[in-house]
Length: 216
Ligand SMILES: *Cc1c(COP(=O)(O)O)cnc(C)c1O
Image (cartoon, rainbow, N blue to C red):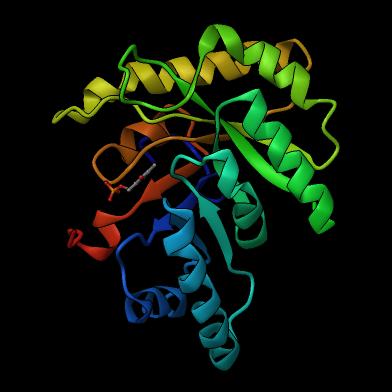
């Protein structure tokens, strides 16, 4: 295999934003179990409806991942609906998630989203603030940081994403060498997931390559 990775090390997250229930059901029948949505409110009703489908189809083991930006005022809803939150990028948000997870009697699995490019439009915490955030999160008992996530700037040529994926990998290595346990790297989308896998992704977030172009 080109990337010399074991397939079981890489989880495919099927991104279902704007995708209807029928297509999601079909994907679940085909064996997909991890689904990603970017907007909390839109996702919630879909997730509820999908539970009914899963019951009648006798499918279990489905997880929902929040991959889009999260505002603190939606933390409660996010904790109630999502198994995994990929987009934690501030101490304030982490603190609110911890509070809501405590109230819900849950340990919320999260990733910290890192901003590697200096573009204002991209969400994520800057590299130099990451260690402080991770130190703070250690004291939060109801959130469990599993790793890092990034969205590189868009390039037509996926090879241009490689340096960002490499940087996230190396960042994770240096944090792990100083005592943080961060097994997951969420990086790579439809147009660049192959490069991301070569550079160590453990979760790829793929929408259009599975479901086709989105109707917006
Ligand atoms: C929409 C989205 C994806 C999936 O994008 P595709 O190009 O359709 O694969 C992945 N990650 C995030 C954060 C997204 O918002």
